[in-house]
Length: 169
Ligand code: FES
Ligand code: FES
Image 1 (cartoon, rainbow, N blue to C red):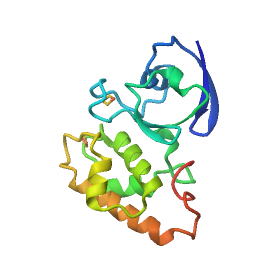
Image 2: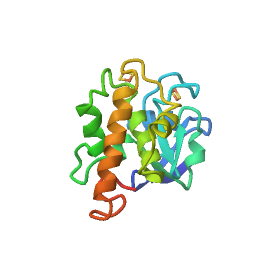
Image 3: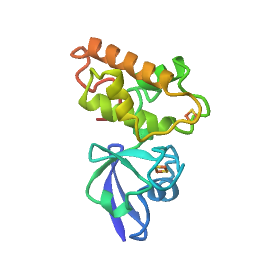
């Protein structure tokens, strides 16, 4: 079937079987390999993307669910110059990236949180990451990085507009 949607700000049309997962559509049909397949059953969050502004496990979503909607993947999260954004830089600076397999999903989950709450408590950050597993870091560095970015974005809030510094939302 023909699936049309907005992907990282640009319209796309893909022909794929109706039972294709959104993850397979992104990786195998659109060559966007940032979203990872970890568990394939909705438990690890490595495949996280935003669908119409909501964090979803793309391994569980069927591609037709994106039809007419808007998908943002890790490839759509970047600084205005195309380089890493503040969150991505902070994750590296805080030692929150080790093997990196969970990182795209972590970034999507963190951005989803920061879109709705720029002043999260550590408990709220932990809760927002509850669906994202990391085998390497123990989470503390990840939470520290997100907390620092939230603080920084609050400071700059108003200077650049609400979402001006971090991607195409
Ligand atoms: S691969 Fe989708 S949640 Fe694990
Ligand atoms: S950095 Fe390896 S799984 Fe998170």
